[in-house]
Amino acid sequence: MANIAFLIKESGMSYFEIMQLPYAVFLSLLKHFQMFELMQNPEYAEELKKAERLKQTEPDWERIRPLTRKEG
Image (cartoon, rainbow, N blue to C red; front, side, top):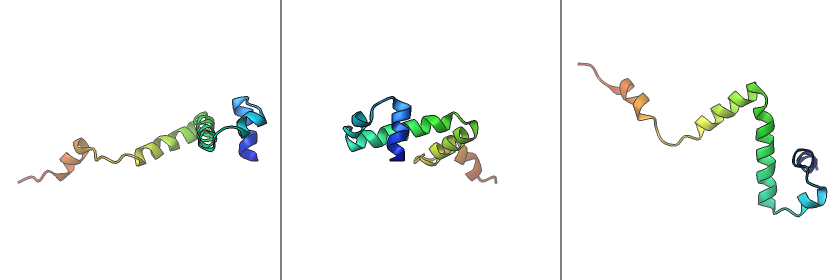
């Protein structure tokens, strides 16, 4: 119920409008409104940026190459 109340406050939608949303849309709205709220605090904004870096799946070869070069 807390999530529904949060979405009512943030989105301006009524209880009945929120209850008629498809579940995936409800979760998406909830996620985005919570992230937007967290981004207002600089400390949390930095944490969210760190979390985005953790999602990176490809290596940064430009940063790795200097570490792997052998002198000799």
